[in-house]
Image (cartoon, rainbow, N blue to C red; front, side, top):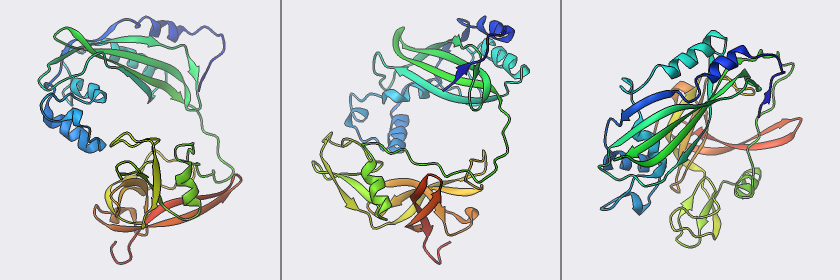
Length: 311
């Protein structure tokens, strides 16, 4: 992903390294205890129907770990100045842009409704200076330890790249449209799209339909499945309008919708056929297969056109 810059002395890097091990938050306290309403909202948003997260004896989904430590607009009282100072040094050096690169979480014990969480955060590491396609800068990793009654319940590592944007070279020709990532789990879906067919996985164990394609059923765990061909009809369940940042081969603004198909599953694609500012939740749409051609060859993608007369 990145490579180190040459061997010149990096005075800024030495100053940044001095922040390693310094606290970013001390004795922070979650603003709310772990609670069933938030667990329910999370599960509804994620489509997670596991019985482990409901009823007596329920636990919180492990991936909610960060939810219980968020400070909201007012922040946390336990926050220190070290992290802000570190980012300030990077800003002064010209590393004014930031992108989150990854996070890692460990779950030593489950969280349950009623648990009161406390946490401490530390600036765990600052990388050497790196050059990426985005620009030159530094990877900064923070680690948050989440506890309940002094017992470690989870560890959250969050890594960002703080960088000076690289100068963009003018492009001589229209950039190619990005290709979807095709692997052994979803190849059948894209083969269907190439034939102008919208295929949905169906578990042969419990009959549950699912999208995106997965190697196993998230309802019963069965690994066997077949497919059904969708009618292509659906409605706009939710949507966003992309204004910024601009991506090569796309001309903002444009609407990206979460489409609920008539069969009950949802998928993400562009909403076309009406101006972006006319897209609304509940609009009826129908799949349309669009073909693109560039130096890499032909590409077919499904988009959803608003039903005539509804825009």
